[in-house]
Structures are given as structure tokens and as C-alpha cells.
Length: 366
Image 1 (spheres, helix red, strand yellow):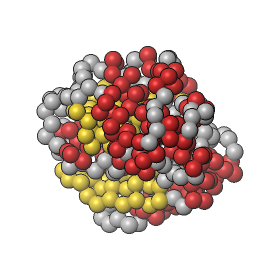
Image 2 (cartoon, rainbow, N blue to C red):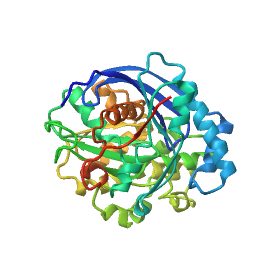
Image 3 (cartoon, rainbow, N blue to C red):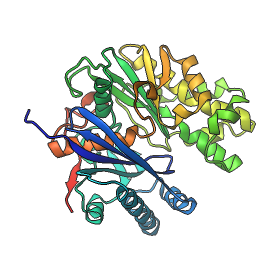
């Protein structure tokens, strides 16, 4: 493989929580991580969040006025935060996922990489999912190739699991003894089920709060295991990975806890992500000794306790590896941007179900 000088790539991520844009610099050649750089967060205002929420679930042909208003927010917010960084060689722009239907080979990330490149005068890698889905992949998750690089950077030698708990949960099983992420047996990745989205929706609808801070309300309640069992009977949990979900695939979770008190409903929806991961353990070719947790769920002690109780192996925050769990997804798109620039694969059969390892993403020039 030809030498490739490491670049300063800036990854951007606006996730399903829609609280704002994470931005993080990665020094990488698209294979190895040389160093982690600075990071920043640009929060959405309340009115911006309301506009983006109104656009959730739409497709490009739907509600043009709503989509145009949401697009203006996405473009300006991302341009704003890019302006806080200096000496950036390449931007990795994911956009805002509004809808994802892998069964129909459709996905919709709101955002215009060409416009962003013009605004910032920086080459921008974007549209990371389309090529994967065009070749039979689920289009998600895309972070596993970066997780493999992180495991290498951290010096891990034994198979391990990275578990991201954002709006949706996803796990990456990693064997860092393999030479590359596209090697057979190096990775297995899939969405485990709902994570923070149902709980956050509950807190917003009942208490007008964005989330259950420190899992405090859930800690005072009792988990309704019957409700969890009803959810596990759904075909998704019997389906073998790779597999992926949309934020709204378990939209009825709130209705299932409607009759419960605030505390019991919060406790049940906090246990749900952990129980979903446990329900998928039978699909793993081995049980990892260590689970490294990232995403918003890692900041919830009640959820972390549920994970430790329901999973085999040790459960710890990913910060124990000197990684930044809050910025991991943004860093992932910096890494994928560098791979896109190099023409390297960003997905494989064991991560998205694609037929063979494939390149992805497009490069927009200013």
C-alpha cells in the first residue's frame, strides 16, 4: 500500500438525540490513528431542535417547507462549528439522519456536503451510506472500522466489545489481532435495539426534561420485566446480524409503559437498552471479557448498573482506554473521511451485510 501522509481530519456528528453537533479532529492516514486533536460542541437552540424534530421521519419528497427549514439549520450549525477550528485538511460530514429503512434500501441524511465545502473552503467527505446500501448493505453502523483502529491504538490484543448507546444502541465486536478491519473475523457489528431515545422521549413528554440526569428518576423505580419480555419477542431480536434500526422502529415503547408511574416507566426504559444487548448475546461468536461503553448512555449510572447485571464480562466506560466517549462518533467520521479520500473500504459484510468490502462517501471540493 502506498504511503499516505497523515492529515488533520475534522469529523462532524449530529446524532439521533438532536441536541447539537459534535466536532473532533483526528490525525490519521485512514489506517492508523496518529493522534487525537481538539473537539467542540455546538448545541441546537430550543427552536432549532423543534424544527429538526418536525423533520424526523420524513423522506426527501416529503414536506419541502419543513425540510428546507431543517436543512438551513444543519448547514449553518455545521459551518459554524467548522469555523472554530484551524488547519483542517478534510471535513467528514455525516448530516442529520431523518429516516432509515434498510429493508427498502433507503436512508436519508439531511445535509449538503457540496454546499458545506463552498461555505468553509475545505474539502468535505459526505454521503457515507448510499454506496453501501446500493450493494446490499444496511448502511449502518459505520463506526466499526474506526472502532477497530481505536482498539489497535489502545494496544488491545484480546477480542473485546465497544457498545455505543445513543438514540439507538450498536455494538462492535473487535478482534484486534487481525491485520485490517475488512479481514474476515476482525469485526462483527449491528444495532442492538433502542437505547436512550425512548427514555428521552418519556422524560420530555411527561416531565418536559430532555433526559433523566444521572439516571436519578429511574433509580427510584422498579423495572417491569414483563414489558421487556414482550419487546424481546419481536422478530428483530431473532434476526442474525448484521442488522440495523431507525430511531423510530420501537416508537411504541412509550405506549407500553403508559400505565406505569414516572419512576417505574423510567426504570423500565432505562433497563431496556441493557436487556436488548443481553438478548442479542446469543448472536455473538464469543462472549467478550470487556465491554467498553460510549455514547450518552455511558453517563447514566443506572443504565451502567443494568448493563453490568445483564451482560457477561466486565462493563466500563470507554474512557478507561483514554478514548473520549462523547466524541467517538465525530472522530469516526473524521476517520471515514480519510479512508474515503484514500479510496479504502468503509464497510464490510460483517458490519453492514454488504456483499464484500466497499468504498463509500463522496468528496466535495470548494
